[in-house]
Every structure is written in structure tokens, then in C-alpha cells.
Amino acid sequence: EVFESLMGSIAQSQGLGGEGGVETPGGGGSEAASTAAAVDKRCKSPYVETVNVGMGGKGAGLASTVHFISGMLTEGYVKGKPFVYGGRLNYATNSHCAAKGVSGDFECYVQPFSSCESAKKRAFARWRAPFSKNNRCAIGRLCNDLSQFKMLPSGAFGKKGLFWLRSAMVMHVMRLTKETQALLALDQLKERIGFKGPIIGVHVRHGDACHTTLRKGMCKGIGVYLPHLRTLSEKYGTRRVYIATDDAAVIKSLSSPTIAAEFDFIYVTEMDARALMDGKQLIERRTDLYRDSSASGHTLMMSALVDLLLLTETDALVGHFLSNLSRLALEMMAAKKGYLPPYISMDGPWCPHWKMCVT
Image 1 (tube, rainbow, N blue to C red):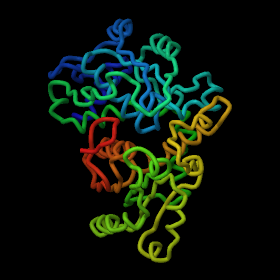
Image 2 (image 1 turned 180 degrees about the vertical axis):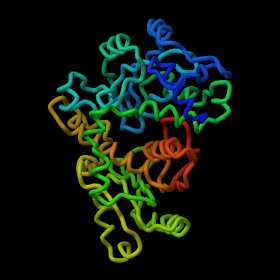
Image 3 (image 1 turned 60 degrees about the vertical axis):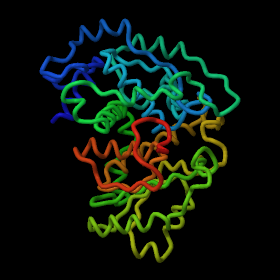
Image 4 (image 1 turned 30 degrees about the vertical axis):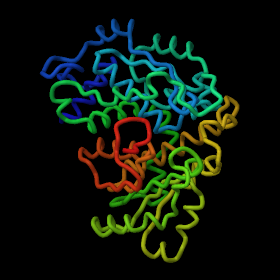
């Protein structure tokens, strides 16, 4: 109930309605949340950010961007300000979003973060692409200042803890539009691939990650994951596994008689972006993918959403928390279930921010 009230409080703080009788962002009692009129007034001076996460300020993938935006949303929430984001999502620079007049806008796929529509339009128009020839951080203080991700409101919401606040924030960011939900058609997709519980989720992040950043040289085949899958399989009585991966070679390896005899692997071949992810160049630098005349970004977005949302519906998770997508899946799983589900990380701890969790 506290978590549901927190979600309602975040929505109302952004002028988007929600359940009544919840706490105000900075309060700890039963004081009613801000009225729509008050939010409209605050929209005259919202918390606005227009920078892009990612190396060189070139933007990043879905999960990194969600985590980055959720930190700024938190600061706005704690300070009692509606949040407006004028930056870009790489994947949204595509022909699908361009046809709607919102190329590059994350809100091509998700509902508005706040009701400050006019401020959003101004911020979005004001954005300028950063100039950077290297992979160094190009977003000023936000490169290393992670204080937004450690902020907690006072009262019952703060007492719930940092993990739960972060989970609530990403759930607010990930409120998909009806159009996006229709395009994904998850219920029909699950029926086609035989997705049903109890089921274990496993995230195998390869692609450009095998050749870049801190994950360089750390990519492992499916065999390394099998002992952990066996542990969860024996503990929870299922051999059904949903595998989310950007590597076609991992999918091919599942046909091994030894592996097939032990687990029933389920995966998606529709909306498949694995061919686009197969490269040694950092995907943020793949400018050929992000053009108004290209559908590649849309394919990447749909594929990432399918993997993320299906992982969210599994009952236990094997991931690697150097990857933002694994951490985001765990946060959304917990938010939907109301408890922290069983999980195993292959390469690091959970952390509350958008950077790699190395400590």
C-alpha cells in the first residue's frame, strides 16, 4: 500500500493525477498532494534538463536513459518541482517517431513525465547536439554527481528505502503509451512463444558490450549461466527459461542436445534487433542507425522493450548488473510483484544510478 501511495504521489507531483490522500513529496503525513492548479503554477519554473546520458553526450540505450531520467525526476520530486526533459533518446530518432513529429523524443513511446507541456516543448526545441570526438563524459556535473539517485523523501516513503524509491521512479518513467502497448501486443506474443509461469528470466548482454567499456573481454557463453539456472530451477521447480539476449550466437547455442535436454528455452524472434547489435563499435556511435529516414532505431526500441517487459514478468532473474537493463528489469519486477524476487547477478551488485555498478 505504501508503494502504491508513493506511485500516486509521484504522479500527482507531476500534475498527472493519481490516488487521493497520499503524502506530498517532501512531507511525511496525511497532507493532500498538490492540486492541479498548484502544479500548473509550478510549471512556470519546473526542473528542466536537456543533456544526454552516454559517452560524449551522444545518448545511450533504453535502460541507461531510463535510469538517468529517473534520477532527475527524483530531484524534481523531492524539491516539489515538476520535471521536464528536453534531451534525446537515440532509439527514438527514427522514421516512426519522425512521422509523428517527435523524432528523438522518449515520449514518442512513453507517457509525458509531467503535465508541463509548454515547458517541455521549449526545452526540447532548445536542445543542441553535443560536439565530442571522444568517449569522455560531456554532461558537466552530472558525470560524477550521483546525489540525485541517493535522495529520499521524508516520511513513510523515505522509510521504504532507496531500492523501492528507485523502482517507483523507473515505473513512472516507463508508463507506455497506448500506441506503444498496441505495437508490442505482449499478450499475443507471449501466447505465440509459450511464455507462462513459473519461468526464470536470464539476460545475456553481448553485442557492442563485448568490445567496449568495462565489459570488454568479459562476455561469456551460455554455459557459464547454466549452474545458476540449475540452482533456480531446482529451488523453484521449473525448467522454463526466457532468454533475453542481443547475440544470435547465444540463441543458436540453445539447440545443443545437452542444453535442450535440461531446460525449455523461450525467446523472441519477432522484432529482432540482434543483427543491428552485432558490431565492435559502441552502439551510441552508430549514427547510421539513428536517422529520421531509418526504421533501425524503432526496431532497437521495440526489441529492447520486449526483452525488458518479458524479463519483468518472470519469477526469478539471472542477469549481470554491469548492464542497466538487468538492473531495470529487477526494479520493475519488484515494483510489479510487491517484493524483491529471487535474483543472481553474474558480474556485480545492484546500484541506484545509471552508471556501471562496479562497487
